[in-house]
Length: 225
Image 1 (cartoon, helix red, strand yellow):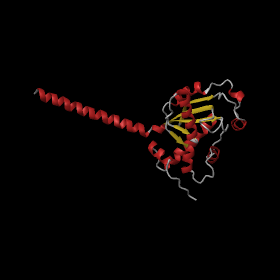
Image 2: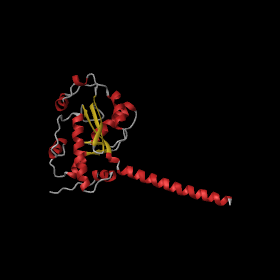
Image 3: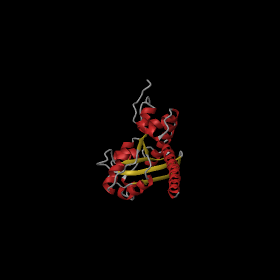
């Protein structure tokens, strides 16, 4: 009789455990499907194109949840080197503007804390992600491993016949106004609008889960003309 009760208790425990693990599996699966419901759109400005030799002059990002911006981060960065004149002509950022700004070593930890583990959306994401990763290694002795998704790569696949995939051209295509082109926060805001448009187009193509979107970003480009 004692052994029978013991077996019954074990069976009850196993049934309870099975229900519990099923709930956890469903919860995790549901969370996976909703991953891109919350993400960060990022843009940086720099003194040049090389993550090894050039410096960051501005950081900006917004957090988006359920298609709404819920938080934002923006700061100028003192690069500790003279800003080239052609960069000033392009961005409007000059040495005077950044003289009282924090250096990247002080600003970057706050920026990375803001991003948390969110997927990073950017136009030319390899550029932004690469600079962040390189500076995290150099100044913080850590890696920056957030997943990235590139709106330029998505444009190559969703708008293959658009003559240029520059952010300004894509904005014109969607009638999006960039009030301060080549400034980090303004570029972040329009990149988010571009990505929202891309999400709508991908939804019509039945590309909805994070796995499908990441796979599509790397897929073969098909031209209609």
